[in-house]
Image (cartoon, rainbow, N blue to C red; front, side, top):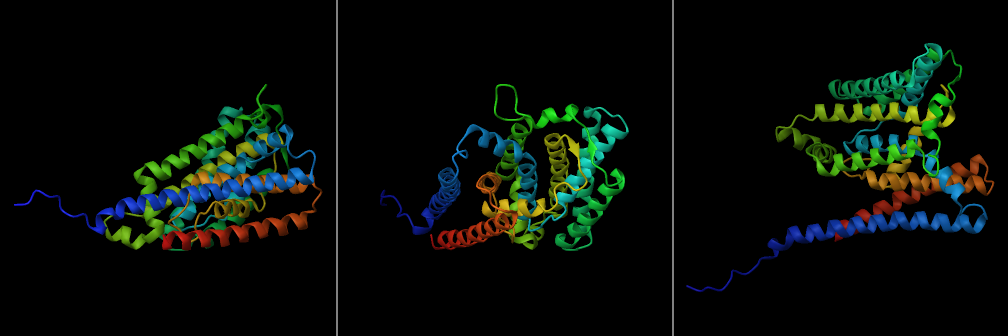
Length: 335
């Protein structure tokens, strides 16, 4: 009997090849996003003498916490194959309720914030329950919630801005001797938690599986409904937190706040490579997507671009991001 080792088949090396391919793809994706970000910084630095400064860094960092937190929730929703168009209105409703609690009812911040978070979570849970239990596409359900939440924000505030002032604005102001605000630091914690949830937990793996093939997940004996409802609830909860952040930055609760913010959140996710068809996405990449949007908008504002021009350029960047993502996918499949 021969002691020579058995020959290694080509199939034995498939897992390692798949791992190498996945790592290569991730590195390529991160490099691409960082390259776009660096290119934008270079362009605006050449066009404006004031862009490359600490003040610009402070402006970008302290204006994005609400969008960043909402985009984390949107990433999770898109990964399971859903979409949430109500996030901007839920932010406005949560913010409005926070303003009513603190201004009209005289509640302290520590007791008003849980109410703000709670209303966001409940509305998000309703989105998930109606979509999953009634079998209605989340696009339709959240579109209805968009209108209901916005109307409720107007009703409870009587369409008036609630000025809160210093009791909340400290959350959005840079810490003494530091360029970042508590809101921005908290947003980074949410990004880290979202990344861990998506990549290191069973919950995250099930979310990806549901977005890839929900029927196959059900056939394997896993109930998909609780996970889908939980994702929408998390998205709503993060809308409530974003409402606190935006209210602190504005020192007031405005029922007109965050109009169209859902589009910015979706754009950040798409720029970061999250698939609108579900099954693929990254919270870290979404973070880069938010930074790209923030740098783009700040740079355009500094060079004096009008609002229509900002919209055209931002839309073009989104389209280019989708085209690049499609190219990356084809490259990954060939690899």
